[in-house]
Length: 458
Image (cartoon, rainbow, N blue to C red):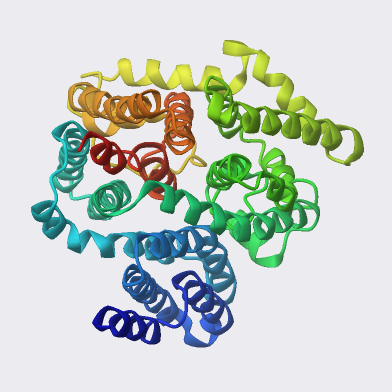
């Protein structure tokens, strides 16, 4: 009787799902941002913190849905506000989703006291966290206060959030929550991506003109390298690829038809790293009987979508040309640029032995070196020694996920292992542990495995 009363009280206290509260907050900020002026930005960040607290009261699954919504649409709201009150170079509003996932970290010490976690699961997190703190200290020593604050925040927030989920969340419940969230998110972002390519809106044009990101194309019809509601083509493509994979491997794969616009948006992003990661994840699922049939269906569906996009759409030649570059290997311009980054670092006076701390590089400035891939990011910010240790810890964490997949062979475990292997394929090509990409990496590709493994052992 008391349990029933408590349950009813909880329902009455939290009548709206967390993701819906996130949507209402985003809509309100977009509508009222101009009237609030500069105050709208810090208010938005604080509101994201409230959403994080509110959603966590409903459980980890509800919180994950809200976090996915905020990471996906916060950059869009930021652009709408910027158009009204001026461009914010620091991107203060993008801190909001990070604050949302930091809220549960308050409970981490209490959870660690109550529940025993195998050391092999916690050591990689601790090592990466220590390396991040080291890089933050290097930035602080150089009086680079902005990077000293933003760098550790972007790296540590996803890591701490995943640590909380590892202890308190159920894998299957979280996968189902993420899949249902992407069923809402992908149709919206996909349709907007196609519209953005055909006729970019005023806020998108303004942001493209102000942001130092040459890789997003030109702010003209059919000239945008689409980023949809997110902050860059890489982030949009990575989220879309993850969502398509989760929906395709779900118990209702036919729902992937709803995400067909997102698949076209993924192609229009022209971000080959996400294409490679998705392909690796699907091929991995073909190795297991429990996921082989669905993975095969995804391959057929993607092949058909690519064929139709090339044959029937006005951007078919663009997609075909981009796909053809996958076979160029080291002769590809992007590959040569990445190899050049290694040479540049190695030729530094100390070969960046101790690192230079976190840095935000304006790649639009003459002579500025872009930072592509985890190897370059860790080497530059942490140095050869600490950066190598950080990379080894990340590979260790991925190895843990793959080990669970091979041990259990259940669809959920295989799915996590596939995402982990897909993340490993991105190591030389993208920074996958910072910001929204770090949120995906730690949450889905690595740390939704240990709790179920622990139960099986018990």
